Image (cartoon, rainbow, N blue to C red; front, top):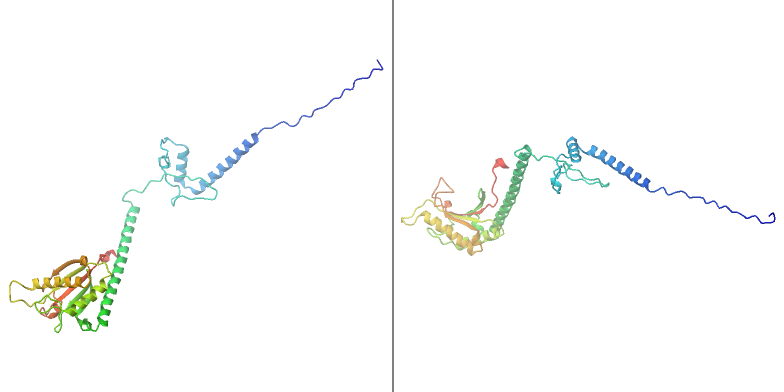
Length: 296
């Protein structure tokens, strides 16, 4: 037995590695980050909201009535913005929160102020349009004066034309003188040089959109016959002037009215028979109404 070889026993010790701990720490870390984000969001809300908006946020997280609407306006906040000046954005991408703010009541001071501002704006707008129209009238006046000065045949009519501004618009009057008249006595035939003057007037106002009013005036001298008087003569002369204006280029659509005034509106009131009362009045009518002084 002693000679027998003893068996050799080899013991191998297996060292166990560290066991798998799982991913629970990740969940805990995510919860921590979420809590911190919620905390900073809370601090931001406390900083940018007032007491009314805080109450709206409180009502949102503790609603008393559930809304069945899916739209923003059907929620507790009523779809209104938390910030009075509108939505705001930030680089951190913070969410927007809204609060319910009641609209102003009808007839409130804000409404009254808004209405007043609208009226003021409209008045200023009309005033600017009137100023532009006034400037275009002045330009037309200068062109007529320049045409009279440059044309030797018309220079003698400088005293026969009066241009001024009236409430209706720009008035151009061609007035008879003792030695010069538009028409022969008792006639409605316009003299050639006067027709040339009318052509200059049409050229000066052709680019303007304003309509025209044409009226005829006579002096107080009467007619021997009873069937034809100053009313008929003034009306016929106004119509003859209209036809002459159209012949030299005036658009017929621009003539708004033609009238005869007889001798009821004399230029020289203390001398009704003066030839200066015989005239044709052409008014370039305003498109923009003149506002009363209390609205300017």
